[in-house]
Image 1 (tube, one colour):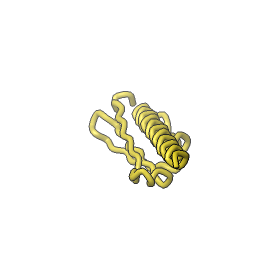
Image 2 (image 1 turned 135 degrees about the vertical axis):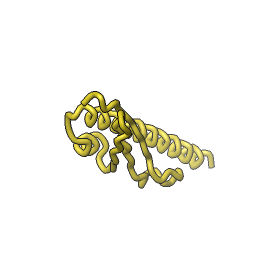
Image 3 (image 1 turned 90 degrees about the horizontal axis):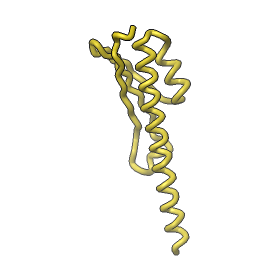
Image 4 (image 1 turned 30 degrees about the horizontal axis):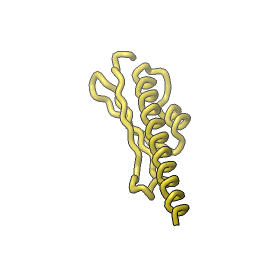
Length: 96
């Protein structure tokens, strides 16, 4: 009876680590995409496609800031009640 409980706890811990890893990757992706757009050095689609495959993004121009919001469906993490992971990052558009 102890072994199934240990396996369950281990599975939940590994799922939590997976969620944390994916969230950090989305934060990094949003940050790199925002800086890339602000500098005028490339396409956000290329950055997001390379760093977070399967993620979607939107771009928002907030005057002096260029913001990128990246989201990724939570198909493998739905068992913990998280439907979607999201990250937003902004960069000064004066870098253009």
